Every structure is written in C-alpha cells, then in structure tokens.
Amino acid sequence: MEWLDKMNEAIDYIETHIEEKIIINDVARIACCSLSRFQRMFTFTTDISITEYIRCRRMALAANELLRSDIKVIDLSLKYGYESPEAFARAFRSFHGISPKSVRKLGIFTNYPRISFQININGGNFGMGTKPLVRIEEHDKEWVVSFKHESGASKEESAISLLKDWALKNINDYAARRYIGCAPKGHHPEGEEHQKNEDVVSVEYMMQMFLFDHEVGSRTFLGAEVCEAPKGLFLVGDVALNELNDDGSLDIGSSMQSAYGIMAECLKEMGGYAFELEERPFYEEHIWHKEWFEGKLTDEKSLAGFKLWLPIKKIHFS
Image 1 (cartoon, rainbow, N blue to C red):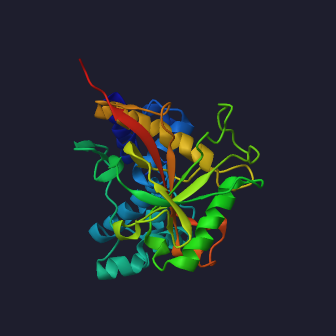
Image 2 (tube, rainbow, N blue to C red):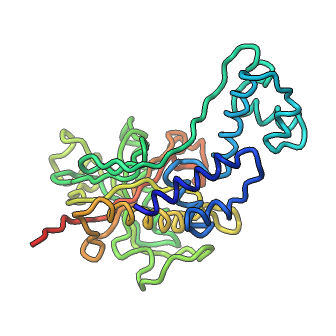
Image 3 (cartoon, rainbow, N blue to C red):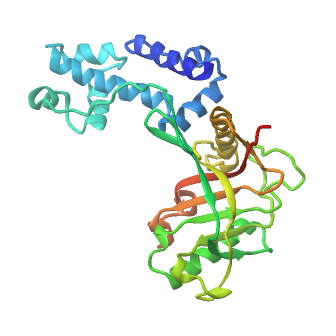
C-alpha cells in the first residue's frame, strides 16, 4: 500500500533530520499529502500531533545521549534546537519528570521509540501497528433507553441534557455505560457539507444508552422509553477531536469529516465490505468524563472520547 509506505518514509525523514529544524510541510510532501491532511492522518493514527511526536523523540534521544556520553547540557540544548539551556531543561523536565542532571545520575528516563506504521488485519479489526484504528461491530437483539427533544435552538444539546439528567437521577454507573447519538435525517438535511464556524442548525436528534439484559422487559425503564438498539454491521472508529473553529471552540463536525476519510481508507484496505450510508444512519458514540456528569467540567471539556459508527454491509462476489 503506497500511502503506508509514504507515511513510513516521512518518519524516516524525521529521524534523519531530528537534530535539525524540521519543516512539517516538507514532511507532508514526502508523505504525498497536503499539510492539513497529513496532520489529521498522523494524529488520528497515533493519538499525538506530529510536532508533539518530534518533541518527544528529541527528548528521548537527548536522555539517551546524556547517559551514553559526557556531553554538556548546554551543547545538548543547542543540538536539539533550544535557544537556551534553561528552555531545554524545562522541556526535558516536563517530558521525563526529572532534570537532565538527575537522569544522568540515576539512569532513569522516559523512553519514546520511533513510530513505525504497519497494517494488521485480524478478523474484523484493522490496526496500525499495535494501535487499533477501527473495528467491525455487529449489533443485534439489544435495547436502549432513548431521549429526543424537538424544540429549541440545539436539539442535540437538549437530548444530551435530558439523558444526563435521567442518568444522574436513576443509575449509579452512568460513567461506565455506552451512549450513542443520532440525527436520523442528518445534521445537514439538505445535503450540504459541514463548514467551519457554521451556525448551529436545529435538527432532530436522539440520545440513547444501552441497557443490560436484566434491565429489559417492558416499554419503559426507570421512566425512560425503551426501544430496540441499532442493528447490523458497523465500522466503529475513534474520532480525533483536534479540529477547532476560529474562536477556539471544538469543531466536532470537521473532526468527524477527517475521521470518516481515514475510516473509508481502512474499509477499502480490509476488502469485502462497503458502506451502507444511504440505507441506514450513522451514529456518534459519546464517551463522557464522570466529572462532567457531576457538574465539575464544562460541556466543552465533557468528552473523554468520541467514536463514529458507520453502517456497512458485506459484499457478495458472484
């Protein structure tokens, strides 16, 4: 796969020039990507930005060099691009938790090996190296409680608020449950693409929480409507929440667009499956911090994770 080879070539370039000033545009060019696409792809597959990866590699290599040689800290700081030993020492301590002097004395440090991109396909799981990117999930005979609010400027926020209030009042393990949301007619009913900084559009939205088997038996559960959970095959993948609007707020729509593009590439590499987006809606899995439920975090910082559930089907070859 050419794109995989290009990503590894980009890493090779970084390693070769790790002691020099690295221009990310040059790295993206080696990967045959635009700058924005390369940054999104790298962050999605590694859970770290490309600039942060370079910093971590430099700090790990600097610690190794401290232990292997008698190089002075001032020379080490210049070697890895820091303007002063003080700035280098601050960055070093932030990464390793101790000073350069202590690393040399105690022989302990935080290692950070270079990244190598590899594809592993095991059953329905698609992985990049040891990190799972996406997986295929099959759902059937499951039940959820469902919350829908059809008035107000943001029906999504209203549905989430209804679910949150119900969970706090009725269950103790709310932070450990699995929650999915869905806009049955789409976030953009007219079919237009998401744009950065766009106004909030009020669309029908449902929030659902999966139930355990022993909780199912009637049309309601603790006062909430019970309905059948989504059925069928889904390609489920993490969404890197790293896209921002101009005002600094999180742009989940753009983050989902980036994740969809990468998930589409993964599905193509798997083979034997195709999207079924015209027949079934996609879902958004919200993973919330416990502190958000308890009112200790703002809505902006509520998410510990976010996943896309994209409906897929098996392709039968004749």
